[in-house]
Image (cartoon, rainbow, N blue to C red; front, side):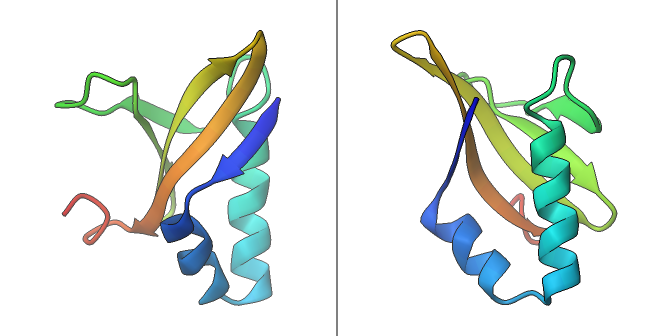
Length: 86
């Protein structure tokens, strides 16, 4: 499975320390397993299949897509709990 990041998610990761970035990347790697690991819920109000992963006070918004029979995990946004849903 291929993991792709949006510009916003890469910008958020660039502001964090190395330990936090590693913790988030480990959680995202857990999403590629079958079944996905973590506190995952479907997001309401979106029809494109967005889900959120809770990791402490951070939220990772992602969706799965298929491109030519290759599964792609697209990380849409990463942020703090209070700011991510705005």
